[in-house]
Length: 397
Picture 1 (cartoon, rainbow, N blue to C red):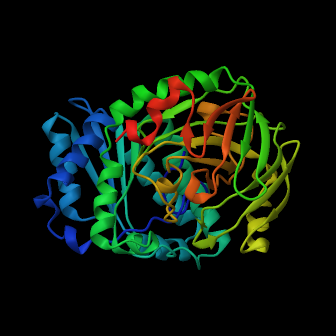
Picture 2: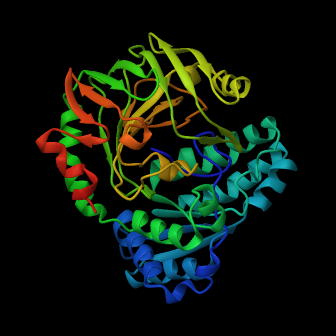
């Protein structure tokens, strides 16, 4: 379950300068539909509640659509405008006292909000790539921790949204117009319908002990999820959405997983990541940048253990585009995440890292299988058990 903002260790850099085709997004009814979804479904804003809209390099017309939608239900919209370029400049100039003051101000604002929308864009996917690690950690340990981890996530109803751009279309290797259609299909899916279809999978996972994953290359991985909750992600925290996640019993993971989707971590692209596990710990890790991969996994003791196992379900997400909020939702995929476990599905692993790495199991990516307690549940990206077939793409579109 991917979420939020630069430069948090659980996130990716967020591509997205506004599309030229969306220069007048007020004219596009899909903008209004998306704003309505965020206000009335994801946040379920109530009359008299404050909602903080943090708009990071998104068109003002979309921010205004959110303000209007919030006001229409009797909410009180608050707006904070930001830019990744400015965030980078602040991080480079950052002192502990300065970042503490920023954290104080933004935390006070967040404490007044009952709901939060993070509409996130950036002109440059690598904006933070040259910010020294000590500067990133300073921001993470002050602004990110106090405003978001300690306040927003625990005390508000929140949702985080990517904003589409031509740079995202390039990364997805799609035309701008085709990517725009893809974006709105993914983001304005009927999440209420998906939520109902997820219930049998949640129930199935809740009663499962042993999981086995087989996939492209030499992937053959076994672990237990016994006693750890399964959580449906149905458009209430992230847009786009569409996954059910849990976590492995911390020391139960054994075998090999070979990821087949590219990933960006703190501005660097990684491909062909292969992890070997013994009793829960990553004992070998290779990829397109093996030294940096292992540097991330050596961040702390928890970074070499897994904090999340999730199954991707969004029928409109069909290809990797190096944006984790999309890629982790690919129908027919799983993600298996080194680092911190979420409170909702806590296996006890703690880390400053939470790195969602994705493996597709659809035929185009080489196929694969998921077994729950030795029973085949999904083959080549499609569920084969009757009570779960409602989650196959043809039944969710």
